[in-house]
Image (tube, rainbow, N blue to C red; front, side, top):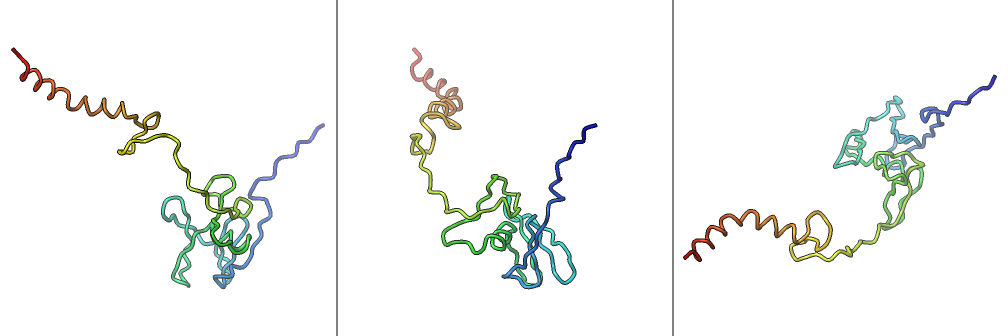
Length: 153
């Protein structure tokens, strides 16, 4: 008789708590949860701008990004010029093991030539030729009638 070992669910992993230095009376966990120490209540993150999850501290009349709170608690202060990086690319995964500090990426310059209108000359959403075709399709019937009238015998 063989026994299979089931994988340990993520919820069963050990969760560590540390005090938030910036906000007395609150703790952050490695599983991206914030709790109030006096009553043990877990604060529910709200959705901020775009993907950012915010924690509202009513006692301090402010809100902070969840990823920033977790990173500053478990990774220490952010080095100057660095940002919080999500290692798996999922910006909703704010667990301590998924966060790290990294310097901001250098601005990428496009290698695709563009026109003054910002259209790519090759590839992209709409090439110059496609744009010209679109314009021609909208003005062509009227232009054709005008040309026929001017040059008709």
